[in-house]
Length: 247
Ligand code: ZN
Image 1: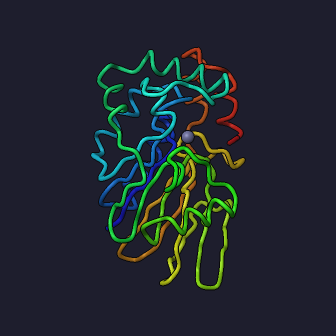
Image 2: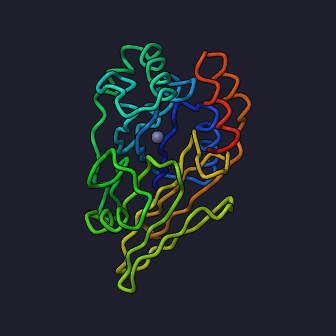
């Protein structure tokens, strides 16, 4: 089974389309979505519709999904994120708001190999950046491979009998992770629609359960088109600027 893995799309339709076209060429069987479909970007309705059309096998909600559909208040959001969340809440159709509000909370076990979550397996809203939290998540995860998002930073953490290791973004267009027996992995594919590792390219992954490997991809997409829509929508300009910086 080959799983297309998408996270932190953030209403960036241009980035999503490029990832889907690339994944379509490579081939996959099912789709897993790790949350934050909306928020920040200018196309929340189009992105929700596109994801619905993929009929994902599993999907968990992100913190921006919760706020954008009115399920939670924007406490803890900075003013730019709050502004974008308010805009998103206004433009989402009632059907899409309801659909987002009904998204399940992670973690979710996909099969014997894979678990998915938005932030971490111990707290859907927690950010995993450092070794302490990564090891906690690795130990808590119910599966050998836990796929997560939320930080918008592509990274692989490995806990093996030999110890702990992490592999950050390499800059390569394709990075392959081969899973070893006896190791546990925590993998963030990076954000589809708002990368934050200094690389503006869209990020997604394909996890192959049969071959026990994960491929991480980076793709150029029409950033200027996404930026123009952000400006036209009246969203904070900084949200357009950061797309070009990958920050
Ligand atoms: Zn996010």
